[in-house]
Image (cartoon, rainbow, N blue to C red; front, side):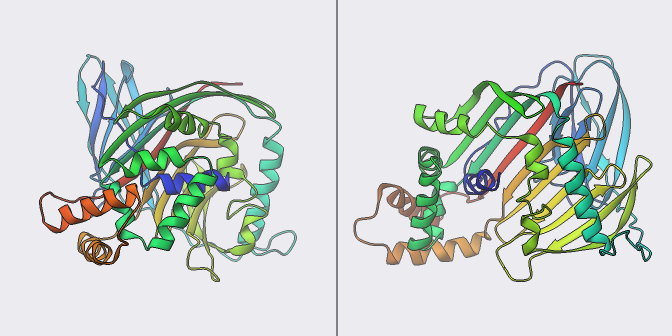
Length: 390
C-alpha cells in the first residue's frame, strides 16, 4: 500500500472529477468553519445509504440521488464537532443545506497507567495492531469504490522542478508502470477522470469486478486507461491498517506519537494521537483518531510540504472501521513563486528539450506573458459505499 500511495501522490498532480448533471433528488450546500473559512475536506455522509462526498476547496459539496424520505446527514471535519441533520426529502429537486462547523472541545487526558507500563500512545498503537490482526480474518463485505481525479495547469509542472528532480519523478512513475498516465496529465492543461470498481472480500479472498472509466476529459489513451484501472486493485482494509503505515508495527519506527487528548463521538471516547518524524523533513505529520474499546481508526489527517491527505472511516459492522472517503491534495506553490521558477527554467533549459519539457516551456512562456489566469489545482478523491456487510 505504501507503493500505491507514492504513485497516488505523484499522480495527484494529475487528474479530475467530472461535474456531472444533477439527477433525481440532490443535496448541495456550503460548509464553513466558525471563522467563515471554507471547510475544504469536510465529509458529508448519509449513514443509511453509505453515500459520501467531501467539500471542495471552496467548501462546496454535492450529493446526488439522495433517497426520498427523512434523511439523516452527517457532517464531519477533523478538529470540529460532528453535525447531524435531518432533512425531509419529498420532491425530485435540489435541496440546499449549509453548515457552519464549531471547534471540538478536546479533553486533556489524565495520567493513565497502562497494563504493560507502555506510555499511553504506544499502548493505543499496539491495541490498533492487535485488533487489526483479529479483524483481518473477519472481513466480509461488498463495496463500490469511486475514484475522482482533477488537475488544472499540471502541464507546467516540468518547469517548476529541477531537471534532475523531474527526471527522477518520471523514472519512478515509469518503473511503477504508470508512465502513460503521467504523460497524459502533463500534456494537458486540464484533466478530469472518474473511475469505478466493485470490491468483494470474504476473509483473505478479495476480487475486483466491473472496473471501468466512467468519464475522462480529454479522453484517456488505451494504455493510460489500462494503467489507471490497474490502480483500482486496492485492499481497503490495508489502506487504514497496513503494518507499513506510520502507526503500523513497521512504519512507526520513524515516528514519535503522543496523545493530544480525547473527544466524545456517538457516546464513545475517541483518542487523538499526533505523530511526527523528528529525523526527516519529508515524512508527513500524522493525526489519528482512535475509538476506545473498538481500537478502530475513525479519522486520519496527514500534512507535509508536499501534500495534505485526509481519511474518514466508519464502523461497517462488528466494530470494524473501514474507509469511506479519502482525499489527497498536493500543496502547490503560490502563483508568484511559480512564475519566478518558470522564468528561471525557461532561461536555463537545454537547447533540445524533451517533448513534455517543451510543452512545459510553452506554458511557462505563455504564463509569463500573462495571457491567461493561472490557478493550479490537483485533487484525488475516493468515496466508498458498502452495499453488503455480513
